[in-house]
Length: 274
Image 1 (cartoon, rainbow, N blue to C red):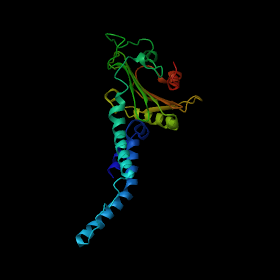
Image 2: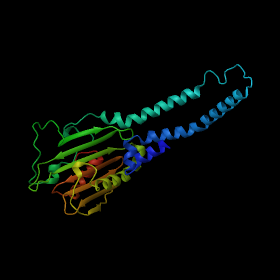
Image 3: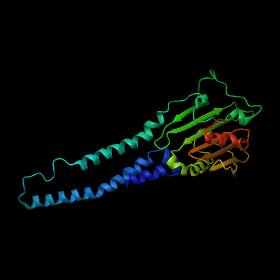
Image 4: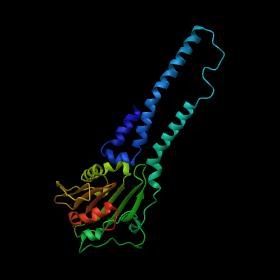
């Protein structure tokens, strides 16, 4: 029951994303393992109960081992249980940190990130860094590893605030899905776009201004999914695309228009240069 509850919690809200980037799959396998172990465990309980009843009744017992001294099944079962426990820990607490920490955006190797300056256009004032070859929390890339999504990139860019005090920024999340699971790319892109429009997932994407999200779906034979979204009367925009086994989500606050950069977004899903 506990395994079922934990699995439901992991798959809530964004089930496809959580399936790829959390311990949901090992947890499901662990639950199935526990279910398959129930008949053998029940048989052992029954044998033990019969043994206890015979002892309570004072029946003479045979002086021999009730079980063979060596059995491969319990050893294999124990080994499988340990393996599943390790797999529960790996995706959540170890694998995501093996990709390294923050690094310059120029070190992104799997695709060419869309530039914030390119979207902002004329008048864009870049965020000033002491060393352009380094990274900080306003200008960085980070590579994450997950059990079912070994290459996942997070790219963040920020510019100086505009005259109204609004911070111009862009975050790109890029996912490389295993080929056997490529059928999940379009649903994942749709799921990520819906998640982005909630605006309350993290401090950078929070906005108190009222407005209705307008979603535009775009058709292109090269992609399985391509949509942009814009919140009326605000600077908030989002775009998501999927092609093959690559998915990209762009979240943007600024004065440009993501719908004018669909070619660049498609190129990111293709893993090529813009």
